[in-house]
Length: 321
Image (cartoon, rainbow, N blue to C red; front, side, top):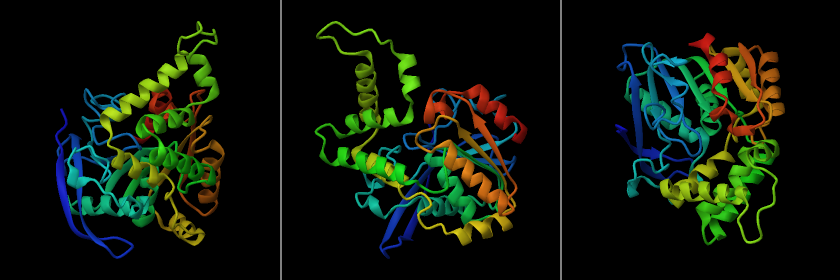
């Protein structure tokens, strides 16, 4: 059962000069705070702070005697403010367009300051969570020993921004916005090969629903049960803000000054954050002098491989933990 703790950040100043109270919910797993190296785990778009345990969405990776071993580490996970996991109305934000991944990264650092954590052994995250990890590293380049962004990139591509725009249109105009937005997203997260492997091409009897349609409907209904519309709008919006303010000069300065060992983990078939763009980021930062490594998961399953190919992911991470 989740044990949420809450940090209240009062008078937080947004870029548009508005001031608002933010509630930063978090969970701790493994060793007590300040008694072991601390690993911060950033959740993805539909994830949350429950990263391990019976309901943990990354329990195959994080746990006792797992790749990230709770016998050795303190694992800390924040909820992105407004993601609705606390299920409290006052923690949702109708003016979600003022949020960016850089702002979330700053809020996470404020949470770490509150908890008196100046240094992290590692920040790890997949997809949106990995992008926030990039933003955190750029904000404090000497506060992290290991930066591990998985199936993500430090700046949103035009392709991704276009996908976000389609999601926004569905969320704003559909009669069943969460269900329909999730159906579209699931096709982005997977690949044609993955879908075709999962379902046979036998044509259903006339009047029957094709299995792929039933599968998409199931995922749409599941999302509606656990997400509020305001929360999903916010999380989708964040994707198009990834790295929006990062300049080439900042990247060059970061690469030359960070103390972090960076391990980029890409998925060769990822259609959301493509292997090509992640490889380009690796090459650029390597050329600028960063201590950076590149690893690649081989999978037909696309972006979702970071939630499926656990054996490969464990192999990539074990040397770091």
